[in-house]
Image 1 (tube, rainbow, N blue to C red):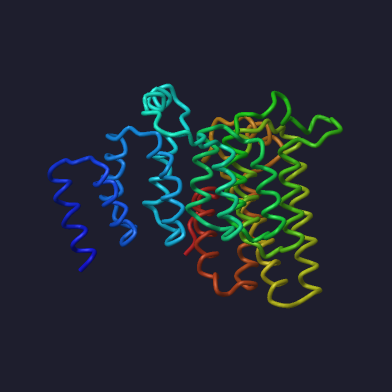
Image 2: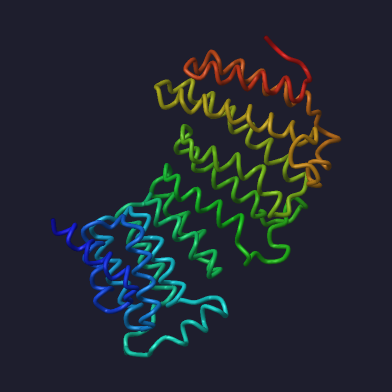
Length: 350
């Protein structure tokens, strides 16, 4: 009854086009009763824009905090936060002009980037895998180009929980999109004493996998990094070959260690190792054949030393082995074998 009455009053104001203080208050009442009502959130932003009050826009921070206490995983709440930040924490000329035109009716200090990042850190303390907060952090970091602290943040969170897929995902996002990389600072493989960013990132993932070889998050990160990083890091063919060799040896050692230890976790780690090897062999074969990622110089530099058909055949052999190691996914491995045979070897298996 209360919700129905409140919505009736709000609809009347919306029909009149009334963008007033009482309309703003009424949206608060409705949102506290139903925080998923996207139309009410949109109308609230219309009211705030019409009032053009700096005090009201800044007060949204406290309002969102109260809604967050009720329902933190709310798409409308986090979407509203972005809209508010575009007004109170501008980055573009249009946003700065809008911010400067706000009625200066408060002495409250402005919201800062540091305060926004601290808010997200507090959310992560309560829930380190909060999807909305991680998506919002990506938006904030990409918008303000504040890359400096993100690598240390993700490293610390992964150290705390190596299975935190959200932290692994954010780390890859930063690596792929950061704009503060020093010229020449990511080059390696040429005999210099310092490891390149490419090699260091692979070593970090390997160290995490030593702790938890069955960790799907780290294997997925490593696979993506191997084949995406040459687009945003300078990697020589020599360095790439050395890293692939290192990873192959690591997988063999982990598989042997898992066999000696026994147990379901060790067995799962062994399956992940073999599956990873098969995947990188196949993905590399596709690139050496020019079937994917055509035009990237690295693959052409590797081609004289690596035969794509041999790589594909090695991948198929590992998938055949996985049929016996991981019976649950036997059909999936069979499908991968058929695809590899059709795309690279030019044959079809029944």
